[in-house]
Length: 333
View 1 (cartoon, rainbow, N blue to C red):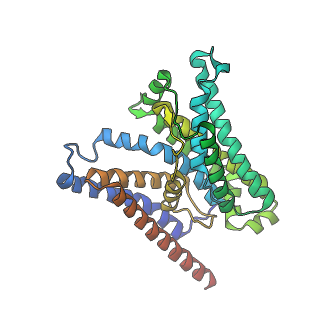
View 2: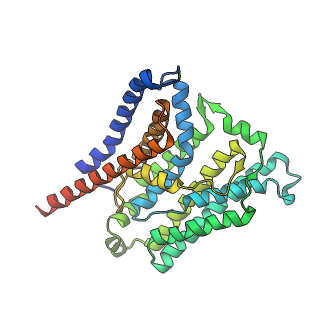
View 3: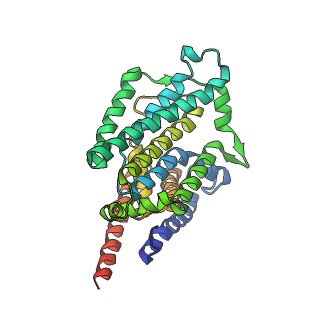
């Protein structure tokens, strides 16, 4: 498992410090700049923020596992869209016409299997060809997006099931359904990464793949499992989101991979692999959503939001590089 170096603790703690700064800044700025009468830290506002974080958050948690492993997955947005199309469209297939609401779990299973299957294709190609995951998933992103357009042309796929809508809009202990899914995924992946052999192997492979092979770790099958996991999570994100909206456009999910990667990097995971934290990625997801919501609260437009997040990401990457350089210099000494 990842060692607890000083730089690691600094990076993990930094995201929560950044979140506190965001809350303070937007609470104060909102008093003077916001057109809304509600304070920024209103309870309903914060609960909604968690719910809105869920689609990207679920994917980002899976991306953390992939990036700790030393890989990356650029196809998650396309897998998200393809799984959503299967989810909504399968509920209208004639073969399931007599099932009534019993078609819902069938559609969930089909959508999740779609995500796992597409993730498995990525994993097999990376494993069997040795081609870098960046290149493989870049091609998969284009190919899977093409499948989405081929499936239903440029038309949206729609099916609104009110049982699903009631499920998606329900609240338990005041927390929305989507938020519970995000919290559940975070807890499960945290357990895998910190309490299982698979998690320890992920850190070992990302830190030094050659040493991991020499230690007897089966790297190829390990990659395959992880790409299946992120495919599953991309599909899960889709079924959670579209249970409420009931309509998916062919371009839905575009840039989700970039938002997910941004959240992971903000949480302190190294692009080179071998270092990262599920809980810190959860913080990265919240930080991004706070930034988007906070800037909107004080009247900033979408372009400004993207510019600010881009600049922050560059600053984080620069800081990460400096910490890593200092770490290597310390080892040489």
